[in-house]
Length: 159
Image (cartoon, rainbow, N blue to C red; front, top):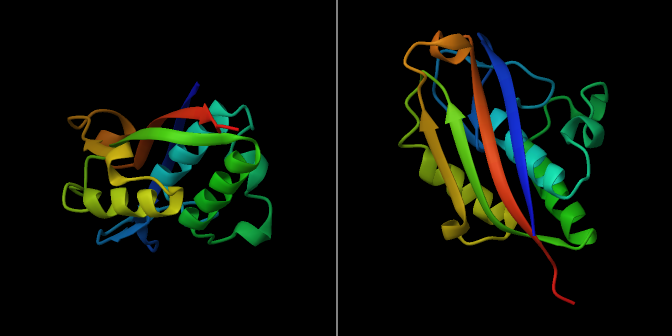
C-alpha cells in the first residue's frame, strides 16, 4: 500500500468558468490556468501520481504544451488512472478537501463524487469530497483563489 498527498491552487479571475471536480459551477469568477484549471482534480491527480512515485501533473501534462490548453481535467484523470493500472496500482480510496470562501459548494459535491467514481472506476463510497472556508483568512479567505488537498491510498494489483 502507498499513500499520496496532492495540493494545488489557482487564482480566481473574471472571464473564466469555475470548474471544480468536473462540475461547471455558477460564479462571478473562474480559475486561471492552462487547462480548465480544475484545482480539485489537479490535487487528486497529484496525489495519485505521488503515491505511485510517478512524478506530478506538470511532468505528464506540462503547461508549456499547447495540447493541454483548455484540457478537460477529468479526461486527464482518466489518463492518470490508465497509467496507474499499467504500473500495477489500483486506488482504494480518495479524500479531497476544497478550500474556498465562495461559492458554497455543498450542493455540487455529490456530482463531483459521481464524476470521480465514474472516471476512476470506483464506488461512490470510496470517494469523499468536502469543502471548507478559511473564515476570511489568507488568499482563499479573501477570494483571491481556490486551493485543494487530496489524499489517496493505492494498493498493488493482485496477480
